[in-house]
Length: 113
Length: 114
Figure (spheres, rainbow over the protein chains, first blue to last red):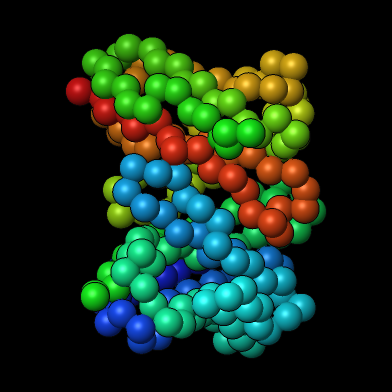
């Protein structure tokens, strides 16, 4: 069963506009969430994370929002740039122990100039 | 530090052959992970080492798969009697706790079984 779901396989936005990538999870035991970006032929690169005790974390153009009651998180990119075009993965983990990550299937973001 | 290094980048093998991949983590990271990614899917956890001890294995890791991390440095992942279903990208990552800083992934080894 898919514990982390990214229901949009792809998203296309214009340069300068906001990109919103969504992620849902089913396991209420997850207490830490991360977003990774992946370019072709490269490994995933860590982007931003959020603890379950927070509802927002911001880093430059990237903001992650967490709605625990809805088991939903989103990544906002403002303003979007062509270099942001990549596959974005949402991941979740339990802190302590192995801290292995459970990934969604990813959303391919295309930012058009 | 050059990050997490994986070799080879690509491997094509015939069904039934054995293959071995190597991962060199970031030197100060004591945790090392192996993940597998197939087309259209996110990475899936395979196994985890803390220093030289293999502390967790996924049920995805069948008896044909074995991983080692001697002396807590580099790690190897061996697949025996490869099957076409083993074709995937094998990703290695390393970290130091807590993982809220995110792992550092290598570029992966793409395995094709023909």
